[in-house]
Amino acid sequence: MAKSQYEGRLVVVASRHDKAAAIARPMHKLLGVQLWSPPDLDTDQFGTFSGDVPRPGTPIEMLRAKIALCRRLFPNPIMLASEGAYSQHPIFPSLGLAQEWMMWDDADNGLVLIEHKTRITPFYYATRLESSEQLAPQLERCGWPKLAVTLHAADLNVPSFKGLRATAEIEHALAHLQGLGAQQIQLATDMRAHLHPPRQRTLRHLAARLARRVRTACPQCQQLGFGARFCETGLACSDCNTPSQQLKMRGVRCEHCGYGHASWQASGYADPYYCTYCNP
Image (tube, rainbow, N blue to C red; front, side):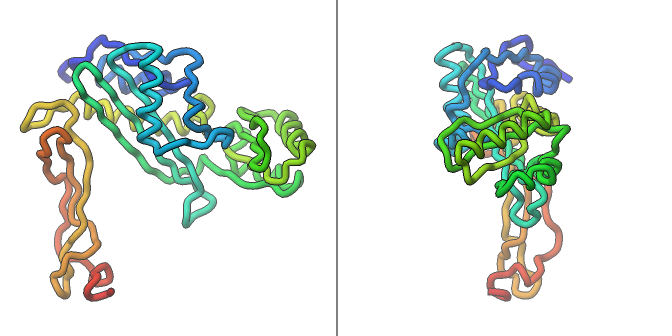
């Protein structure tokens, strides 16, 4: 594999939860870069998983905000940030829906790339506790004791308890919140990257995808970053030939010049079930 033009460069990771360690391997292997995170960078101001701080914007806006904050403190040309969003799956409530975004920002070359990954995960769960008796059965659904948990009083303006692992500290935290009069206590998997090995794996996969884009030049304009994914619906209906809602193709393209090509193309025709004319 040819050397990357970023070989030996420093990339500052705008994170306080040890994401640099989680993604160092693919970034070094594919780009030859060294990663570093500033100590005690306050990215919690852009939202916390525990619910203490609501996210004040979209995930993409938070990526930009983290990088802007980090660059003010450490003016390194190349920055990297990630943002995650986890929720219960809308159809399978025993599973979680994971979304991760990662941004590469090279200010010297004007190269800003964003990769996004969505997956179903069994390693996230959140629930409201109505009583202390619910604690034990719900803990296992959160992945405990392999994963840490958080307790958050949604109806009180008090700090959450995070990184809870020992039974005694979980019970103490719950009793403390109940003693304050909390009626809406949320128990959830602690999704902070340094405490969640399955999330670290997801971040590594996403980092590898991003790194491949960083080193890939567009065949037409030679700008780095080729490989933005896109898809198109409109597969023709087998009955009436009208474009349907069914997927027609997936492809990759250059966000600089617009050149792209299909990486997969459907064969045949769409089921009339997906046709808005045959099945309005």
